[in-house]
Length: 355
Image 1 (cartoon, rainbow, N blue to C red):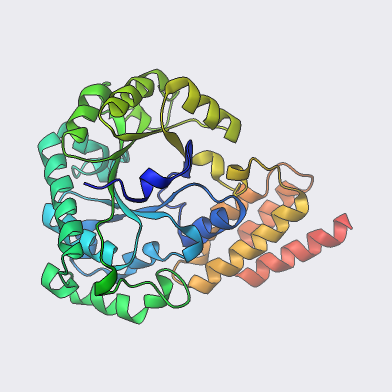
Image 2 (cartoon, rainbow, N blue to C red):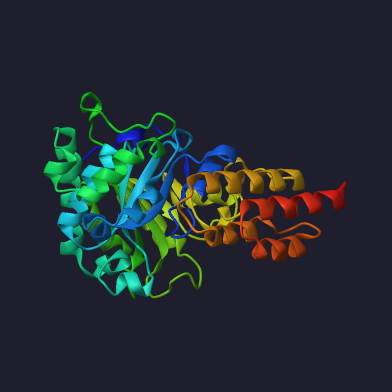
């Protein structure tokens, strides 16, 4: 397997972690515009749904050139479906593919996907093998049709090609085919910590980049991330030439740098600390004017994409409206909004009061 773009990233690597229901195209665009993480990931998307032609999943993979390097994340259990999805993602011009082996949510894990793969190393290895095969077959010229990608998916891609990479689209041409890197994001264990043994299993497949969250599946997001364990995994990865990224409970840019230095990782992926804070990666404290401007831009970009219900934007609006006088009232007004115009009206009224 290849290091790909990972090898050329400036150290330490401080990237935006994939978060279900959060790192949608509009959120990633704002993070790229205001903070520019070293790398960012899409939300995870189910390979079985893609294999069966569920088109509504594809907008999660919309991205702009501004977001590069951008990695697409997948989850599921069907090895053949992983193969088809891998070929498709290569065709869409992603910089890398990441396999989710860390989601602790019951509806995912109960089906054997996400963090449940920690208990099923044989399947985990088969999934990695099939994704790697898809990447290699793409580089060697296989078509979407021959790879078995569903006709509905192929049709959607052709109709919406400009949504993958910018104005002109970046659907990869035959002359530009290349092998892109494969990575895995996981946890330190299922119900008990087995991080070192598990990391060695994953490394044995040939992956060159590994991210690990410092909690077990059983912990979900409670308690504290165990960075001592992550430090031991970082050492194993370094000894095997694998780029290791820690994840969990990073509160600030300074905190990220301190953890990287203390525990010896190549970098970190930051999740919840970026909610409502696309400035995180610059270490900047935004002014109230910055916040209001970003809210308007976020809403505008969200509506431009026109693939998600407006309701899904409201958590982002709530995260933006914290830490300033009148934030609670503004947040309550945003929760009543039904469109971008409603949000703009709330901001306009608020702006009059602070002039």
